[in-house]
Length: 314
Ligand code: SF4
Image (cartoon, rainbow, N blue to C red; front, side):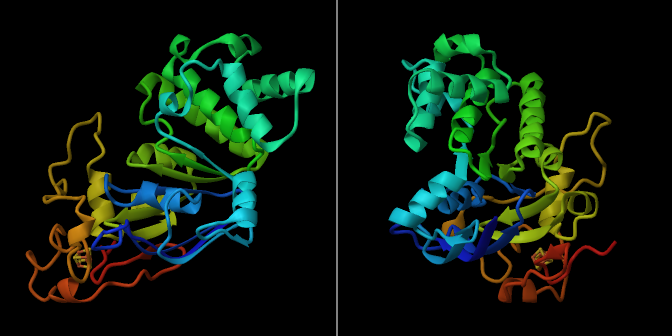
């Protein structure tokens, strides 16, 4: 459903790629979670997939069609096949448009429908996301964050997509509401056979939604594989630090890994392994690790792959 081959993204006037040679493969019906700190390039990569950001090198294929920097036919294919759900539902809904009008607009962009047929489709989409039909007359300011995110999902589903890109889909919601939206997303995937590319800095969200994980740091994939394997037995020192950073009710581990340094400066990407200045096992810590600052490690392993000269041994 989604194949990325060596995709690079560089902003106009930028000195370095913010996404660097990313290759990923998401089969139809699967869910891949992209995780990493702010500035790791996750959202930029998702925007490049749907044509909102220009790809500077590499290829993007969606449902078998090359949609790299799409024009005309490829753009039409992309809009009919892939839709994006953004972090802030408020920003993607017009404040003076009722929910019914907002969903109807998304339907009519794709299909010529009007009158009772259009009303029935709007009600069907609201029902699909768990909102009663009486919500058609409501305005965004009359609704909660969770309800607004359901409307945003209904708008995305109006195109009858096969691939949904979920960019921090619950990050703006109260914790108590997050679970209900995550449950809805899981149910929709099962019911409609959707494929997901989900982006989050929250490992718990990705673990709940996705069977596969790819960990990004400064624009490149550091580790990828089955979610349970990557989170339970991380091979990359960056992934291990992210897992260690998750708060635990039982208190902090005493041997917890703490990362230092600025996580978000892609314009000054370090040589060799881009994580080496912050790596707890890197050149500053262990003699003989000079290679970390000299050579970019390749992503190796199947299905659990890691890009590290000295992966964690289990
Ligand atoms: Fe650390 Fe070296 Fe592995 Fe990079 S390649 S994560 S610096 S051990």
